[in-house]
Every structure is written in C-alpha cells, then in structure tokens.
Length: 247
Image (cartoon, rainbow, N blue to C red; front, side):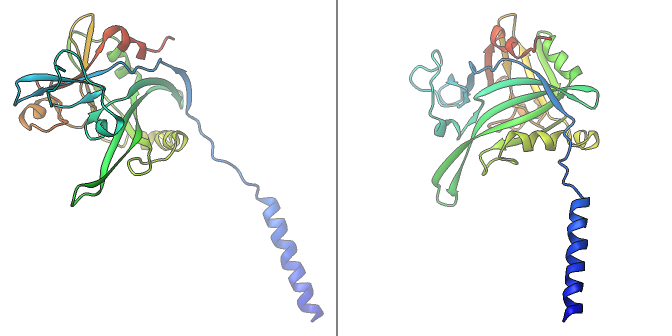
C-alpha cells in the first residue's frame, strides 16, 4: 500500500513540474493597423426599372422598383427591406503594416437577410455584416488617382464578420487575424474586382465588389451583376475622397 502511495506522489510531482516547465504563450499577431480613413455613409443606389422605364433611387440600396417619384428623390428603406437587396451601409479604409509591407483594408458594411423557412417564404431575418477586403498599396494608389471612366481595382483577399448566420467570424479580431495569418495564405485567393467609375470631378459611381467581369454583367442580367447601364452606387467625389488616408 505504501509503495502505491509513493508511486502516485511521484507521478503527481512529475506532472506538476511538466506543467510548470511549459508556460502558455499567446500567438503573435504581426499585422498592425496604423492609420484610418473617415467613414463614408452618404451613398445612393440607382437601378433601372425596366417596366416603368425609369431609374429608381434608394439610400444605400440597389432596388429596381420605381415608386413615389424616387427617380428624383431617393427613398430610405428599413434595414429589413435593405437586407433583401444589394446594399452598402458604410465604407472605410484602414492602412495595415504586415511583414514589412503596406496593405489597405476596406470595411464594406452591409445588411444580409434570409428566410428561416425558404420553401414557404416565411420568417425573414437579417443582420449586419462587415466584409473586409484587402488591397495592395498599388491598387489603393490607383483608386486615389483614378482616370475618368471605369477603373478596375483588384482585391487580394476577403472575409466577413458580424451576424453569425451570414459571416465567417463573429468579431473583427478573429477575421483580421485570419486574413493576415501568413503571406502564403494572404495571396491564395482569386482576386475580386471593384469597378469604380469616375464620371467627372464631382461624381463617383461604383459596383459591388465581385468575381464577375463587367462584360459578363451586361450579358448575364443578374440583379447584382456589374453593369453601369443598369445599376450603380453613386457618391459625390468630395465624400468618396474621405476614404483616402492622410499620410
């Protein structure tokens, strides 16, 4: 009995020393946000109503239903109604340093929605989601120095955080750490394109960021396909320029 007690004491001593010898260490995050742009919210969505032959304007939302003279004065929708359409609540850029290089992170915040019972179209629910798009410093400079006409700005990688039903991550830190886990992982995805059109010195129009090409958007008439002839978000150049970070 005494031998068994001594053996148990010896095992306990070895285990306690083993635990003491291996301290817990948090993973190191090398990516750091160093600067931020202003947040931009004054965005209007314009989409052409084929039946009425009129443009329909909605605040922060693309919706092709003309009503209440909204070809002249945009209508404000509820978050629930917005979540049933292509929408953007706000935009903001942040400058990120990662392994000696500079990247720019676009916060593209939107409402997403879905039916709880899709077979009978019942139980619509929605939530706020922020899509994080990573751009190289070269692509960001192209955005700052746009020529008149359509400019194609390429992303590197993206992910989402926010409402659990519509996002990859529940919070920003988890999403950020996943994006900048390693250089190898950062450049694994196929680039997406942000089509931004500089109409003149006063007006900027843009499409939702997607994998779709502009030419295919005109052929395949899908509600969120890029097509400046049918839909676009519009913002004044003075507001859009608030996304340019002051160095």
